[in-house]
Image 1 (tube, protein in one colour):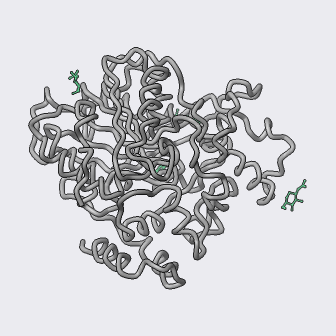
Image 2: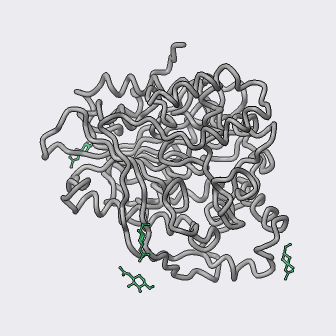
Image 3: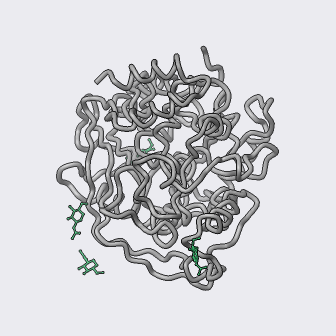
Length: 431
Ligand SMILES: *[C@@H]1O[C@H](CO)[C@@H](O)[C@H](O)[C@H]1NC(C)=O
Ligand SMILES: *[C@@H]1O[C@H](CO)[C@@H](O)[C@H](O)[C@H]1NC(C)=O
Ligand SMILES: *[C@@H]1O[C@H](CO)[C@@H](O)[C@H](O)[C@H]1NC(C)=O
Ligand SMILES: *[C@@H]1O[C@H](CO)[C@@H](O)[C@H](O)[C@H]1NC(C)=O
């Protein structure tokens, strides 16, 4: 049980400078099971066949040799350029794709203190790209586990953190096609099927929840916005953090992500076909990930675990819409009529930061407000909050344990995270 903590401290003391020893440690630690609270457990959700209207990239990019790593890498790099936007519906080749026997893995937590059936609610947690469900569980370090905090605070919410298809443990015997299948429209259909079960079924994990709060970070937030564009009633509350908002001065350029074909990185990705990408394994890789996803106050040890446990990004995820970092991929004019909360870290280079000297990024606030206006004009309320002293992966920064403590303290107060948008995270972070 104490392994992760021990590893964390091990990493804290030995992480810098990055050495060959750490790369060996990465291989060893990748096999340690995560530490979960007693009220949480791993679950599997069989969804059967999923059909979605995806771009047929293999026809649309007819000039591309899909087995040539260099050629594929060139196209992929262009999909990390936030200035590249191609309206997905301009592609002439949108086709239904059917993925068979989709089973989604997740971590399900029950409220620490049982709640009456009428008051049951759930926070449905969807991870960013290059992460999996453990993002919401502090990568297995309990003091960072937001999912856990919600199951003890927030009047005792249930939580479900899933692995998107093709990520974490959610894949079949072979990995899904990274170009044809793993695109936002497909993920949205998966999310919709999960929400249907959350709302309707009443067996096992399912409690026919009347109140669903969708919480997504980064790519998971974009998918949430797309889900609510297509199915506005799928959530009562939407909490989205780390959405791309606009061009800013210090956004990462494609090479900075340091992504390479995943099969060439660590053994656990060896069976992934060309079209899955992960951070390179070399002396600079940890630093590269930190530079793009971290900023402000964080523990080096946790940032190092973040690098060790990194998941992948698939070509179809990056390239749908030209670049998944283009702000235009956040859909406009949703009919979603619930409550929305839009968050970003002050030093979030994807979503927010105006400069490296940002003090709660004043321009960012305006941009988050404009997300409310153009994406969610019909909400009951849409609030914003710029989180001080943190980069993109804010829940894994020093802010994380603070948010955890706040959520736990407010067990009587909030029904949902949506109510806590502006208050959840105090502006003045104490260290
Ligand atoms: C899934 O699709 C396959 C063929 O595409 C079909 O044979 C099978 O019956 C479908 N399964 C379900 C549960 O619909
Ligand atoms: C595609 O790339 C692979 C790997 O570089 C190469 O072996 C193959 O000949 C190429 N195919 C074509 C049609 O150029
Ligand atoms: C569907 O997936 C489950 C879980 O991965 C597996 O146990 C089962 O054999 C699969 N069924 C078919 C028909 O492939
Ligand atoms: C769901 O939770 C939100 C946020 O707390 C609350 O405003 C709303 O009334 C709840 N909806 C239902 C149907 O309980």
